[in-house]
Length: 186
Image 1: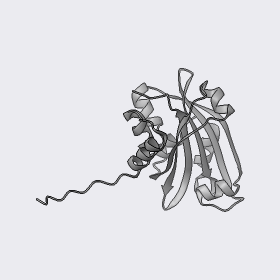
Image 2: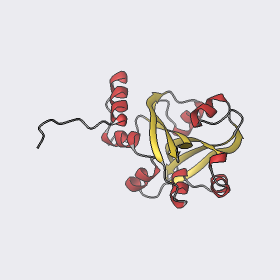
Image 3: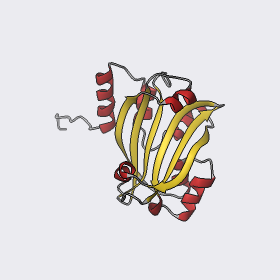
């Protein structure tokens, strides 16, 4: 047996450590799991808390501006589905989600489901058996804007992560998930 051991690399763990060091905080184990999970965190929350509900705050298709086009690697002006949701349990908001979904990279059926149903993007991917690779882009703290302060009834920092879902070497979803730093401290 080789006596040399190597540390298993983990980008999410490294990003979490940087966040903790830069902000002089210690995340709970659950917060670390939620920051590093592959794909949207709805499935983990559902396992922990039971049935989750989704409320679509806004959803529409628009032409991508430069920032959105860069995030999903499309041309400025291409159509993108923009979706803002809140995952909640018994009316208590738990997680805010924002997604950019390039319209040309989805079937008409997927776009129709996104526009017409209160269903998570993760559930749609699962139901259509769309295999994706998750790449966590950023994990950080941010100050909530007025809308998120009102939704969460909280002015404290939000623990936020940005990630992309890749299917056949193309970004099919860019997503941001955020919740108050004071949540999930167990």
